[in-house]
Image 1 (spheres, rainbow, N blue to C red):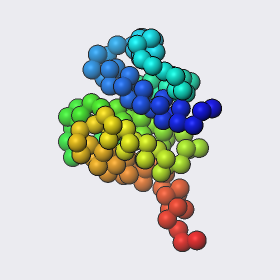
Image 2 (cartoon, rainbow, N blue to C red):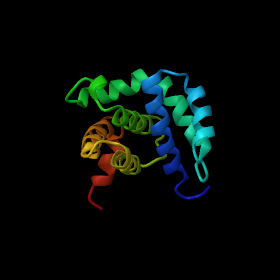
Image 3 (spheres, helix red, strand yellow):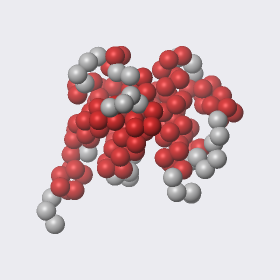
Length: 146
């Protein structure tokens, strides 16, 4: 696998999930059109498919992890940042093989690229709290003195 391809898969998934949130089209339709309309070289297409299909399937569960940490209703969160929060929560819960710091860093980078001016700080703060709930033992182990 080419290095960075999962990063590119996440970038594409943010855009596809943003479109899904706004249009409510079937994720598979958005995915098909997205692949036709965008440059997908060096993208981990399998991971892109996985995120675009699985995040909507687990939406209520993911939102339940995110919502308690928000300072507003989830519907009022910028749609790009909402997509990033959902991808991060999904990876925390369903991909324990990905270190929580990698997930957090990827989300912050995506928010810097696609979100509002200070959106990355908001995404970081919320996902840090989500990680504390879903990855508490991993976080404690990382913070333990060596």
